[in-house]
Image 1 (tube, rainbow, N blue to C red):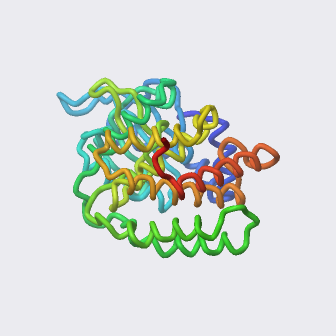
Image 2 (image 1 turned 90 degrees about the horizontal axis):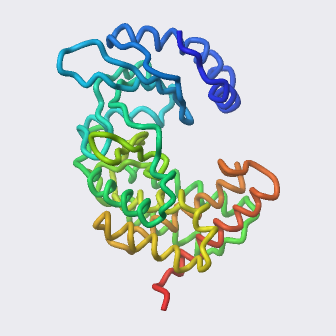
Image 3 (image 1 turned 135 degrees about the vertical axis):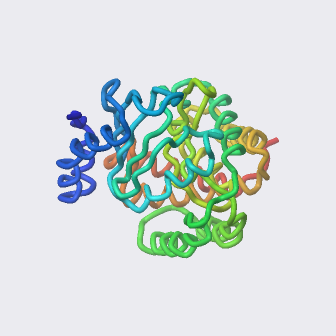
Length: 317
């Protein structure tokens, strides 16, 4: 039986409560059954992400199959439903390959990548360029049944309006309206294009088949420029170190748009939406880097400043 990492146990119980505790109690048995079904043996320590565990394995099955793989089992959640659909549609193009799936158990047998991520290379230009190139490759025809970004527009817009009315914040009406306009004007575009949905540097891993491969997709269908916003939002902490924040933001927008072959203005607008959404989320729930206290307040103020800059974003002289 596998040993579930203590940190994963704590965060899962804190987030999911009793359902999470019950699932964790069953998790070693679920993994054991899948190892037998897919003819695998563990091949290294168990690691974990935010919502699932990953067990490195060796495959003993069909002749000619790649022996190294990774068994991923996630906590059952609507956000994880379409992950295997995205992998299946890509077929290894810019993302790890899907070998097997068990949707009832939210489990997949995947191509094994390395544990080092794009976030660790320390070169901001390279991070943005690699992410942009992968974004272009992942913009494939979307399979039927994926959630469309257009179907989330109403919920996201309602959330922004509610937060703007109920939370204390410094965002202007113009900044909130700009985010709402992006949802209504861009959220309905490209409904048949597959979008990763959470493309950032920690979801891009070193690999052997290709230098970098994407993992952990949400599996949306919609405008590929959407993930330019997720990428820029994820680089916010690195932008804190910039001598000139405006120029640093423009550089990210320019480099990602060029590498992804996307319209820069669409990327900017999605980035502005993500920044506004993140600012409100920070005030409600905090951030991964700071859930509460003075640092949370400081990060929230920075994200609000970023949202304002992106709202009035013209190229610097």
